[in-house]
View 1 (cartoon, rainbow, N blue to C red):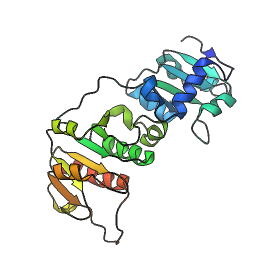
View 2: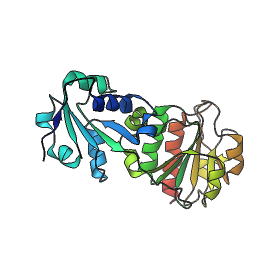
View 3: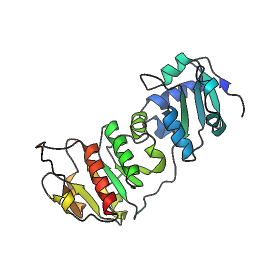
View 4: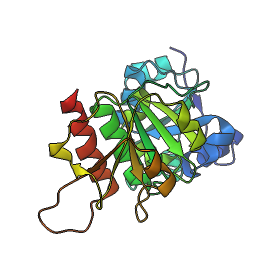
Length: 255
């Protein structure tokens, strides 16, 4: 294992680039790289066989860092704790982070069990839905235009490593969905049978809609199956991430 490169100036060009990728929600689209921070996300990336372009360590953490972090990275740097705090997006910086390449050449898989995100705008909701997708066997996520940036720092933190096991496509149009060969399923508070009373397709595409407006009328019209989630407590609606967890779990039982 080669020794890491020490960087002490906040004006270092590499550190400037890292700050932008770590703090700007859409910088990854131009850079082709994204930032993850902390032992959990870094370890999850390595478990999936990803090779970091850069591993970043705080001076305090470097002496105790797992050897596999630096061994896996193409390049490693060590920076003062104060500079890592500037780089970090966390209230309590985790002291280690990876810069990873955004997957390229990802194509829509027509027969894959899928989650469609229709303008889901809250990063926490998007990340939570990705976690549920990974947990319940859905391997493809299609994000329609208007959905929160999938590889943004906040979505990555909320996803807790789910990104690394999913096929993710952004900027998908309604026309692109015509390539799907699995039925589209939507939830609605106004139509469809209760989810516990319906026989769900073995493989399908669940559409999760905008936090306030729900699934758009065009996508609703393309759905083969409509279901309702019973709410005996009397609430008007569920948070979209909570609804997604219920729906995807129900599909996993049907399979």
